[in-house]
Image (cartoon, rainbow, N blue to C red; front, side, top):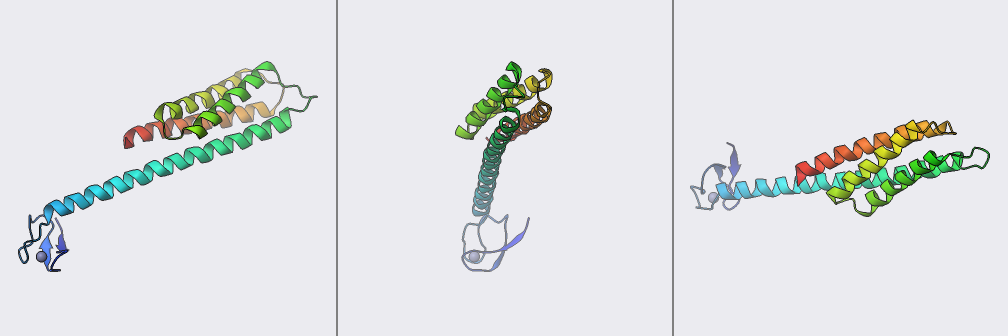
Length: 156
Ligand SMILES: [Zn+2]
């Protein structure tokens, strides 16, 4: 319970009072309504931040993929079939995650693709030493997307 100023007459009134004793302006329902509005705005803001961070993460992973291909793609290193599969899975994650950052299914799928890319990268005994680093980054991104999915569920 708190003492607020009546929005109509400015006199002090309890926020639990159904109406202002001085002017009769309804108080309690208005306070509840304002709280609900504030909560909805907070929820929207969190959803927006989550969405933005997922997009940033997709851009980051695209940069990592390009960087990895720049190092590993040179002909004398010759990445193997599994390393190519890792890159394809990671690219799928980027495309899906960036195209539909608001959809819970695609957010989950993005996490799955990143995690799979990482697992393939770790298990493949790649020809390039950067493959392990790439795989660990992808698993990290996958975990972040799983967390993001879980947070999204909380704000639905
Ligand atoms: Zn009043």
